[in-house]
Image (tube, rainbow, N blue to C red; front, side, top):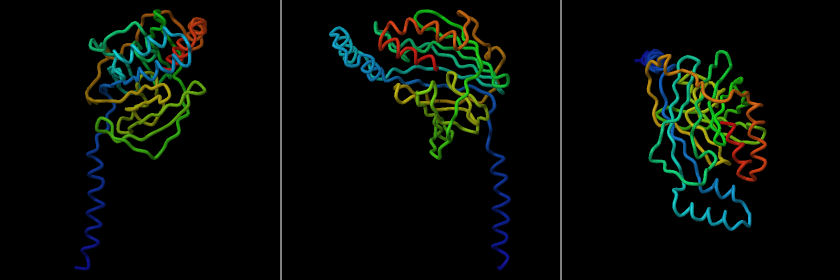
Length: 256
């Protein structure tokens, strides 16, 4: 009988590696994301304390006739160190004469994490640009907070981008690809949840499909006026400066 404890310890040590072998790591597949935009909060911030009665009336009318949260769908294809993020047309999203920053989803972003380069097709102020530049470097700070997203245990990380915009991400190391929605990346695993709290927008994965991804599903976008990151900001900053809160807020969408 005195040998039973030693036998139990041996069995526990033996079972551990077997269980670990059953954990599946996914390095290619498709992730479906839902983007949620608090349009009421964004519009209120854009209207601000302006005394313009037209803007105030437009804001109140929007609140009465439009849902608070706008939902937009997208997919992220990934294989090895390549990712392609693109929107899914949403015919039920509706339309309104007020265009809310972050309220549309037009970006198509291809990232090659091996070369450190990305290509993003962006529609800004009715113009389409083709942004080509190096992958953005984000100084993430990992935390101990965990959250389950689409069946994956994800760890929280925080960062500041564009000097002042606070972002929160949840990533899983079970998908060992340093990618994520839009152009966000740089964590030791795939980002399945992302929030820009002060801009009232979030992205969360709703489904992860583990399957082979074809080359055709990872084609970079090709349409738009070619720009690098600096050139794109210069192209839209003049218009944004003339547009008050609308323009300043719209400039923030360039971080996506």
